[in-house]
Amino acid sequence: MSRILLWHGYLLGGTGSNVYSRALAREWRLAGHDVTVVCQEHHPELYDLGGAPVVRPELPGGLLPVFVLDRYEGVEARLLQDFTRAERDDYVEANAAALRELLPADVVFTNHVLLGGPVGAATGAPYRVKAHGSELEYSMRGRPELCAWGRETLAGADAVFVGSEHIRNVLEDVVGHVDRVVEVPPGVDIHEWRPRPRAEALELLLAEARADPPNPGNANERLPDENNAARLAAFLADERPTVVYFGKLIRNKGVHLLIEAMRGLDARCVIVGFGDYRAELEAQAASLPAGQVLFTGPFEHRHLVGLLPLADVSVVPSIFPEAFGMVAAEAAAAGCPPLVARHSGLAEVAAGLEEEYGTRFASLASFATDDVADLRAKLEAILALPAADRALLKESARRAVVARWSWASVAERLLA
Image (cartoon, rainbow, N blue to C red):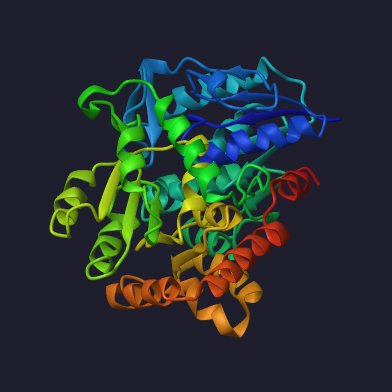
């Protein structure tokens, strides 16, 4: 058994590195390790961490360095590149001090090149860093001071983990050569994300929606929309072909391409997420036939494990590089075939799907980036498949995840 300190500078809910961190904590705990999570989550009781305790450091000046501006409870989020050097140093020391109080440990595991690298280095203990991609693309690229800081602190790490060949290349492109880089893909909980019969999935989704906290006027963008249970029940009442998107609602995620691709399709679309581009997307969707698109606000895993088995395809239309297609892998595990833009880490997910699909269905795993016509054509092809072929596609998608991206194997490899 190992004593592990898992540092993540943000929350535990939502998507991306938040999900990665909480899933790692849970898997390591289930494997018998002693794990403490150090993060900014105010409500850790909402998440299954396998019993791992959570420590939340106080932030100097209440400032939280982020890569994309969002609202955070109790702190002021500010872009990392807009921090002064003194503010960055204060943040690093506050977090490193919290970790030092928890030492000794066999493993100090930190997330994000910045500021995980500096935080790990400042503990004085051996540390490992997971590069996620968002810090590299949104905050570090083109900023020599931040790139140099990342390079210096990674040099002292026992290992630097990347989730894909794409992120390995981005890391070297942004910070220069780094030693001891190890490629370990993100994982998927194949027990949580699984196919379910339609009636069971719908009942689960509606039950979770009814359990959501109130959100009058949808004033809190981080909560699901008000009255979602009734809205979803009406929208999903029949078995009309269904397309799903879940993730951030920012322009780089390419959701506008999906909405345009839905034009003329005999299918409905559920769009899950929050972000500063939602109003524009809703205005765009208003030009489609009434009732074709439903926005729900953000969902947690507890909602999505019910929603995805109800869908025929999950689209990941990003127009900006992605470290790894976690949402695509989660959808595939739930038996909802993903259709991804073919670039960066998404292309690696597509390649895994294609191996399982075989030559007959391989072209249905991806579409040309930023190409509405190709996206629409692929959607039409998937939705036109006979029921038996569609079932085969769903089975093949899940098989790809089980073989390549289960959390148990990923968590073990990160400690090797």
